[in-house]
Length: 79
Image (cartoon, rainbow, N blue to C red; front, side, top):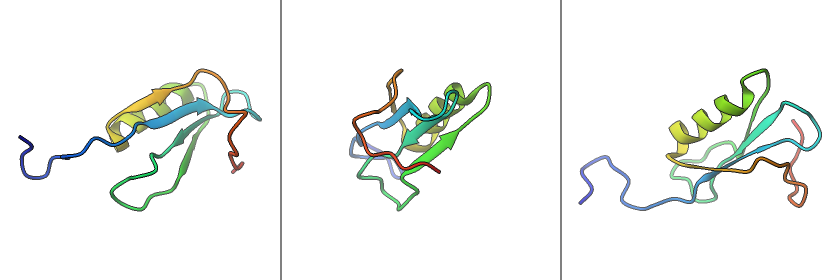
């Protein structure tokens, strides 16, 4: 049984994948059904971008789905 303040429903995981157009840039894509309105995409760059992106996804959304390859079939805007 979920206590007060805990999530009672399971959300789909955030997606974490490298940007197709830039080496070393990682993207966290928020789940479609997040509880609060948030920015859809979050970008991470630098030497620890991959681990920072995964950490952010777990802390912000509770889970992550890791894709080690660029999302070429999705329309991902550049920032």
